[in-house]
Image (cartoon, rainbow, N blue to C red; front, side, top):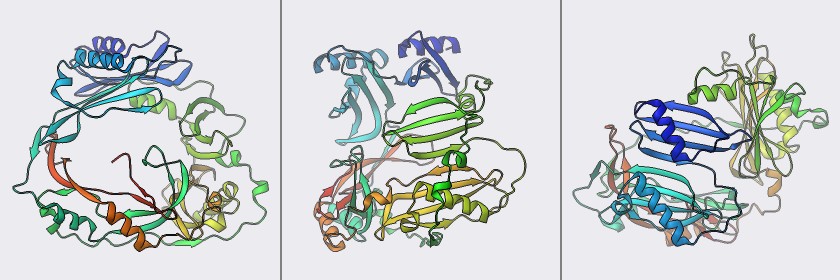
Length: 462
């Protein structure tokens, strides 16, 4: 199908409103991707992916803002089946429907998969989301498996269990239990034991267990404690340190959906011209001479920096000078940084334009999961070119006792009581490019034991 016809088909399938503008049309050997956005709200975008013959592969569009009443579930299902049958006749009968569940308050998910030997094959079939008023807002067709690999014999479940539990261990962390990740999540920080065991599936005949693996040397860079920096935070202008000053204007703002807002800043009043409508050209336009920041909605505190500003000239600052700048910035973000963080150095590289430093966070001697703060400093300007804070502000953990109520042995016993193994199909990359699956045993177990209550917490995302 010619490109103009593909574009017209995509606009029709995506039901693109007239006031939306086309941001990208990208063509590859086997697919065409089209992307539109609302001129007044770039968070509201529509994406349609087609095969080159016009067959729909995927669709994503925002849920409509409406005062209409929700439709009965039977009517929503009827519309789902009608849309599916329009683009893939018979697909709903060809695949097996999984249990559908509300993804969030404003949409319903339906998922169909291919089955073999009574087991689902992941990433097959299709899924579709509809708003509660019946509009299709997401669709993705994943198709069928190309081949199945069945072992000559299937090992006993107890043998498979022994493989997974023989080296079971736990590690103590502070971690946020996100509702989107854990079945018992509450979006609050907890002291937890994280399960450590061979989590990768193993072939159902267990032959892989006989493979020998070379010992991997621990080459984690050494960490060093910080010394307090006296009386500096009162004199630090964070915006100046990241290069954000009065000459900049905000070109975009996006709600990241997790209590944070992303912003893009640029000197010039207009964006540079694009070479074409490709995704690469769109990326280049939106990042050229742009400073991106993330802020917490409630507090306004800076929560991330990524600079795409290009500076002329040669580096003029040493690694030591950049380290001092990084430390000043860290203490501006966390005034008690010396109580919680240790520094970990990158390998020095005189040819790099930035010097990078990693700060590992602990609270009460307990490491924080996703507790790294990463700070990069431009050797040309001395400005912060990249900043990523830890997931949790360590000072907010003072109300949680860092001494667990459960011992490690009690935590391991709780995991052993709950763990089981199941046969499953697992996608196998044999280098052929085919969508091939093999039969495996995989462990089902609580990923986390709450270290004070003893609750076994399961992942909701597999």
